[in-house]
Image 1 (tube, helix red, strand yellow):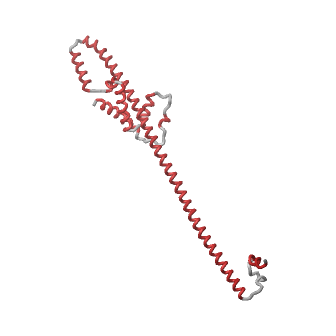
Image 2 (image 1 turned 135 degrees about the vertical axis):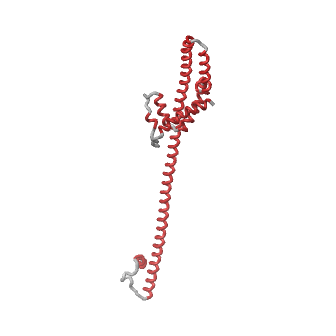
Length: 233
């Protein structure tokens, strides 16, 4: 339809701006809105924001802006609809009418026709300017939303990687503690076995001493102190 042609034309204009601006892709974490100054005019800010948006974002923003303006005001729809056939027919009809008039009448009608065309073109330009402004702002907002969602996904990935790294450290420490506990249990078992073997050897030594008839083992310091204390009592 006619609205789609205007939208596509407006979108093509946005795509040309985007193609020129995407030659040097900006850094991922660069803040585009920081370059905006409150003292700049609205059109300068709109032009800057429009260069940031990609072609798909600009096309969606332009379509939404034109649809919203047409729904808001019927005059905007009439101003934005550009029908080449109607314009050609009007020009041809005006030419036919002017051909039937005198030179003086044609001179009198020229200022009126120029004033009428100026009013129509001014209204259409005003609505198109508003559509361009809304399109650029919508594209910048969509771009900012995309950046925010991208940053949020990156933060979630970073948090997940940090949590995973901490869990791996904890698992490694738990495994290390389990190995230490197992080693300590083995050492404790060896100590108990050594203690039992020493006691068994000491008992065998005492039995052999008593069987040999040694009467005074105390003089040779053979008995352990606990045993000597018991005998003294």
